[in-house]
Image (tube, rainbow, N blue to C red; front, side):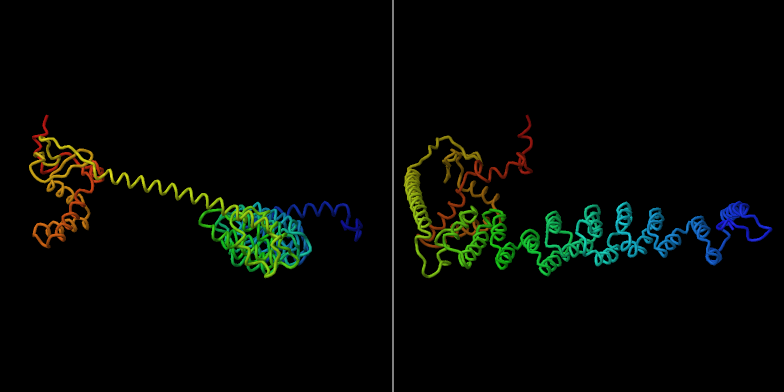
Amino acid sequence: MVATKAELSESTDARGASDDLVKTRREYQEFIAKHKSDLDSKTVYEIISSHDREDELLFFANTITDYEYVLSYWIQRERWQDALSVLNKQSNPETFYKYSNVLMTHAPTPFVEILMRRSNIEPAKMIPALLSYNETATSISLKENKAVRYLNFAAQNYPEVPASVHNTLISILTAHPTSSESMLSSYLESAPTPPPFDADFALRLCKLHDRLQSCIHIYSNILNQPTAAVQLALDTGDIDLAASVASRLDPLPTNKSLRKHLWLLIAEKKIKQPGSSIKSAMEFLKRNPASTDLLKIEDLIPFFPDFVVIDDFKDEICQALETYSRHIDSLKSEMDASQMTAEQIKREIDMLDQRYAIVEPGERCWICGMPVLARQFFVFPCQHAFHSDCLGKRVLESSSQTRRKNIKELQSKVSAGLGIGPQRAKWIKELDGIVGEQCVLCGDLGIRSVDEPFITNKDNVKEWII
């Protein structure tokens, strides 16, 4: 009657029916609000659905906060905007995972917006829905691809996102029919070290889909295999790209042999390239300063054809000969300087034989305090003098175990009178060389003993009392 505004019988009033409808609905809503905890939801759903009362059904579901029922209701009727409005009020991540596939397919833009506002969503659990959406999004660009947008967002904003998320993003970027690698290259270049994705998996995908630039980047910057990167560029005929990779290698002394090897590969490919002349090859190498610092003309000659006119690289040969001439002059100067140094050292050695030290009659041993002239002694250029036995004892106490053992063996041999003539003189000379190697007060032994106390347990403490 309300819909037709007509009276169905003499005892009915069409205008009064509208008031009755409003009153009945109000009574229904009051009843539901009052007794919602006493009602069986399944039974109520069946009763209301049997009368096709949509508004009353949704009111009941919202009253008992059964938002998942409301969400499912709108999704079944493909009313995506209403479904997203309900979803936007949800905080349970399981609800998002449950309906992600259908919403990502039919309403990707607003659904991704909602996802990006939720911090409790695990991006890895959204991968099936993202891949399902991507299968139907091959005709749109990567910038418009909502799966790429969300995966990029997750990679940048979730520091501990699993590798599967990054691998999924790489698989979408590499498999897209576009010929541009800008987005893929940008992502790979911005990746930290170590990379959050599986580098071998990324390399296989890039090779599968002919992403040359990305393969080169993975080889040279992530896997640290510049030789493989250069070889791949040369195999595809991109000599300029290979030169670019070799030029970016750090010019460290430890990398010199590797850099030279790479430039030799590039030079060989350029010289033997069909249609390339010797002159053009030499000009190409000259345009790359890194190669000219490493390669010489004799390194390139084996790559030239058996019959080649020398005029094509005459200037390079002349320049190389001039460089060798300057190098020979430099070596001669170094040899002259070395000879002068050797003569100076020889003169200083001769002067050492004439060096002497003056020992005064009353001078005492710096270890025992007794007159130094009383028995055999050592005197050093620093004017410190020691008895031979005092010095030997001090050196023995301060030496390492191996050296101490060597000194004791020599002392026992000399004391026992072993050996004859030259043999005994050799032992004495070796022992004197060890003991008198340096002054125990000024040399290394004195420096190492700087933290030793002045007074030991063997000293008379009373002698130090002021």
